[in-house]
Length: 158
Image 1: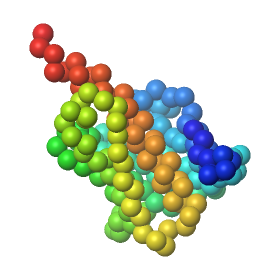
Image 2: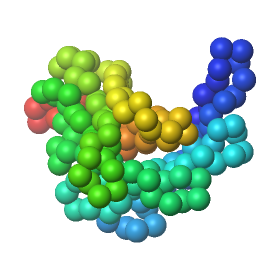
Image 3: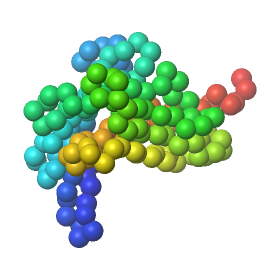
């Protein structure tokens, strides 16, 4: 994915290797690389294997862990917002969150419309803010983009 500025220049590139979306197989854990400018890595978001919770580590350009993201055990957004907390490495401080906002039951079931809200403390490095933006796209891909057909089929009585 490419992010452009107002003049149409590419300023950020998000690259996700093609992998199965299966957390139980180590080679299938998801990852996204964030480049700014294109070709210059500024950080990575990598999935952490966990049986119940979606977890990710945010890494800098040297692949050193900087922050972590912990999501809820239930990804269903049919009742309200779904929050993914951005925490310090020790897990004690919440420095931000990525929220999949509830858009109404009809939109949630029948459309691919998604609305995310990203919040983070102002003292986070601008590069890490771009990496958190990349994390939002990865979360959307993993948990919300492919579920629309399944939600619709669940409503059809057989």
